[in-house]
Length: 447
Image (cartoon, rainbow, N blue to C red; front, side, top):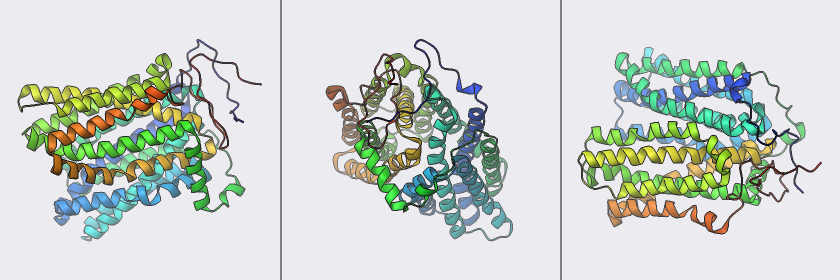
């Protein structure tokens, strides 16, 4: 038996109110945008601080980045439990303050001549842990602040801001490093995280009181409950499989692509930068249209179609030849179009899993997908490097892109529950529910 939340649906043919009219959503936008800028600046400033102050080698920087990514496979499932146990607003504030304090250690220890690689590794791990907390918590928090019919639009606006930070944040970080010493530039990231904490603190909508009975349950048991909920729900199961396959394959693709550009196409550093930079504006444009398209053509149809077509462009990248203006222009166009459609795919996917998941499971469902997604990235990178060395760069790149192209095909052929989701988001499913996708036309709710 399906349990549905008692949320009033808009009348057929009406346009949902903009989430921008919601004061709490605006505060979340400020917090999320500032957090994204802080993270992007720190991604540039911290490695440069390590190189400029302690003479870190490429291996040291790589180790530092790996340490910063360890909290995802090690802690994300436990973070999902915490997100479902505690008030999410407080968790986001704690995550921002934690990152600000951790990064503040860099200029502080530098001022007292105590900055070294061990301190930088500790900072990287602390920042990575707080980033996991903010990442999982923010995606689980949005459905508490906006109406169900505003979830897709809200995610689209958040992704637009994130894309802007992805484009401008590294440039701002590089500018600050060029104007000041790298440890001093880290202070800018601290300021953005503090601004994010203030933005989230301004949210006033009350949250449910944590259930004492549920908070007393053993964490491993709650992790198991979240994994079983994902496994039993056909929509979430499809979302998880697609996410895991794409993350694994894209990690393999990127590992080959990074070598393919300079050695396969013999591009200069400037030309490689142009090819990579084109994805950022594509993500931004895709985010702008990602809420309107599902309302017109259906969430499932848009998600699967964008997944397929975006990977066509990756196949096209493997077919580019030469190292002249035409080759660089082709890469720029293909990467831009890939960014557009992959962003639309991502926003639709997040909206579906937020809408279908009960509030008490949101943290654990998000954590389960993050665990599988990030956890497979190192394996995918290793597999891509192996393929590139055994098959050659272009055949390996083409092969991985072709496999990515095939991932959504079974959903077209079998008309899975994910594909059948129409222009309305599916209803919330109880953990024992046998979910049915929302139809294309609005249907009467049972009383």
